[in-house]
Length: 483
Length: 91
Image 1 (cartoon, rainbow over the protein chains, first blue to last red):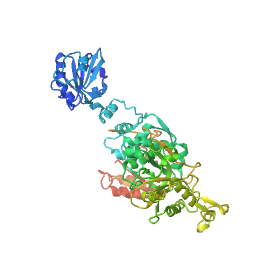
Image 2: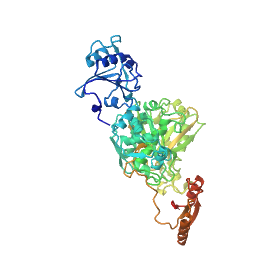
Image 3: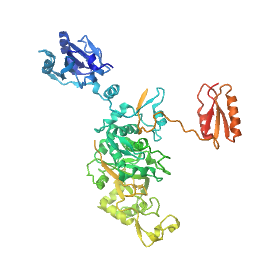
Image 4: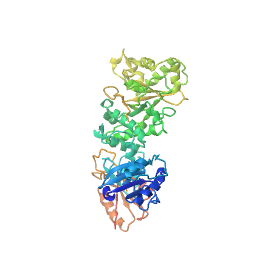
């Protein structure tokens, strides 16, 4: 492509217009006046036949010239002298046009002012195409060419980029659009991604977010989730490499939940919501593709769990009488945040009879004590996902979240006699030193409560954790979501 | 042609890697696929003989026509029955 200046007139006026713009239509007679004086070149963005009033129109439906001139509004009128731009105006403003053109009294029958319209070259879609065509994307990832006859979705599998489901092909255009979801520099390194400790840039996050099916507005949430899992306290390498079931569970709080239409209510932990599904998937794809963490390689999981495809949901703050999860980590209510937890699956807590908080707490504690094995305490951190109908019982009784946690902790004390190896006819358990002592199922501060779920059904859930919970293993980590 | 952006750490070549070849055939089952080209059987019969002499299990398959890819049931059958496949591609 020749340099732009070589294709433009050295001296004179340039107008950039499109037919699909009432202000451009309005100025057509003015353009004819200026053309009659000579020295006007008109570039047309959409219809090469427009404006009929100007005989020497130049077809810029490729938008190359518009892009090169950085036109944002049409009509744009530019004066050039000695091969460079000396003045410019846009829209229709008689005084401005008189100044730029040097002709007085033009457009006599027109109103004095009309705002212009958005130029085609800056419309989403066109803009990305132009940036790609002119090599101005600023994207530095290696380009992988897919054969003309090759199915690009099959290529995602063949390249080893997939979690087992189809991935959206990460074209430059899609990645550029994804990056429009954040103000952060694509080259910024978010952290070192386990297990291979590869530098993870915002651009690589965006590429994987495209593949996961995210919308650009989800990207800040994905970035926050990724920053959280890369925090050494979360111990992503261990979470990945363990033979246990766990993977990152992403829980979202704050206004961003509603801004990106996440599901916190019916089937919140299930399928069907794009944001829930794709944010969790993006985190997993990043660990796989950038970190190199693949099953049966560094990922040594014995069984894994279906949440390793994606495990992300929002807390139902509006329907809750309790403080949101993020406040447990010092992030104020009303601030968008993600919390990541090394967790697995969902163990149901079915209680349709309890109508007083003591009974319901006992019910929940009995289920909590079964995580991993009834013979193990402390076993792991856990999240209790309380459904609305269960929460109602605590709400009516005036139980705060702190009160419920305190009661559950007390109820999760287990006598050593029940935990010693061989007790209950189960070899699993501890040595005789446990006899005469009491152990709690959870480390202090190792149980968390989140509110989610649909209005009907007395079914809460437990997300179990990794046996190396706590400081020796993985700690839940929260991060504010920033644009 | 579609250009995709590499989602990985770019520490391995972008060209797709073939599956690693086994170090030895002993203990594996070898499929011999006749693609229905004339005299392919001569080549494969000799391979069958040589492999069998080494005590390597051999299974024989044949495509119905050289002109089209192997039908899906045949591909599935081979994947389920053998560890490696040898085929003669030319006359």
